[in-house]
Structures are given as C-alpha cells and as structure tokens.
Length: 100
Image (cartoon, rainbow, N blue to C red; front, side, top):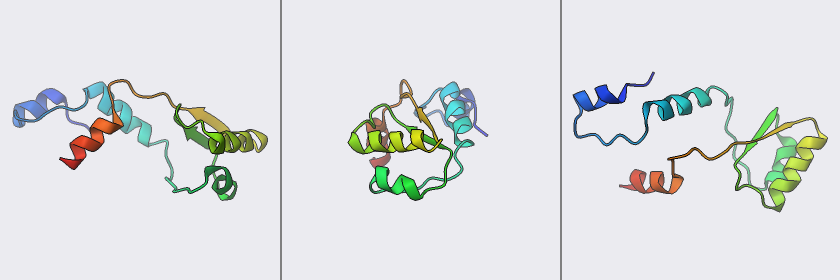
C-alpha cells in the first residue's frame, strides 16, 4: 500500500515528498517481478551458476564483463532486459538524503 501524497502532507505537513504518487506506485509495482536479489563479484563468471530467466541491466552496465554476460545469456536462452533510468530519480541524491 502507498499513502496518497496529499494525505501525507495533511497528517505530516512538514514532510518533504520525494516521489510523486505515480512514481511510488511504479516502484512498488515493479518489486513484484523480483523473486530474489543476488550478489555477484564477476558478473560474466558468476552468472553461469545462477538459476534465472531474465537478466535486468541498467543502460550504464555496458563494460566488457556485462557484454560477456549478455552474450552468455543469449547463447543459453536467457532474456536480457535493459531497464531505462527513471526520470526524476537520482541514486546520488537518494544516497545523500539517506546519509542525512
């Protein structure tokens, strides 16, 4: 569940709203597609021992290791999805806000 921004401000008028209601809904709905988050060290090697259907990568994950991982996925029937950046959301700003 997600609270409507107007009601957040009604009950907590001093709050800084970081995301629009649509952005919050989008992020929460996207979570249901993730079955498990795993940690990797060398993506092109570690991926070979993982059980998965879809490799989701960001547009900036394009170095040689990711290129080899993507090629391995294509050769082994795994889907590769490049997720675009979400407009208005800056991971650098989120880290700064989190550390405050």
